[in-house]
Image (cartoon, rainbow, N blue to C red; front, side, top):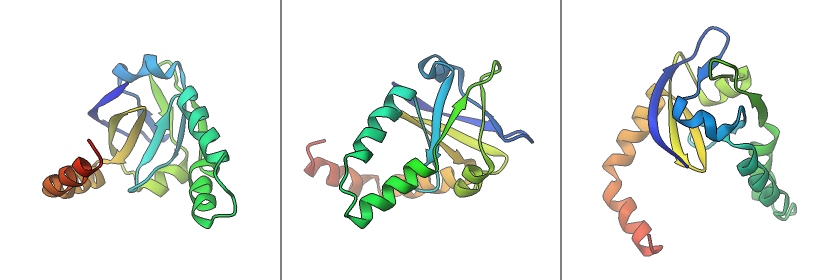
Length: 143
């Protein structure tokens, strides 16, 4: 289970350090793909396989399912975590998420998200302002 929020930096080679707390769960490998809200999603191999199977089972006749599958699957990269606990984020993923020199790695149960630190702060501030309305809507869903 991934929980917590950690700040880090991106080096000149596009490497980001995976917080030590998360490394053992990833077992030296992960899949990084385009996420939502201008972030990158990071999955363990077993979680990625589950997600990929779900996406593959969606009806391809629907434009939204094709689009979401393309977003997630075509942009995915199977990455190795080096001995220093870093992953090298491909240029196209860093560009997609607008990642500069500082990042936030956030744990969200079955995945990690990597955000540009400024975008994370902006998103978090806006979400915190709406927390009451969000909680009310989730209450209607039984959460």
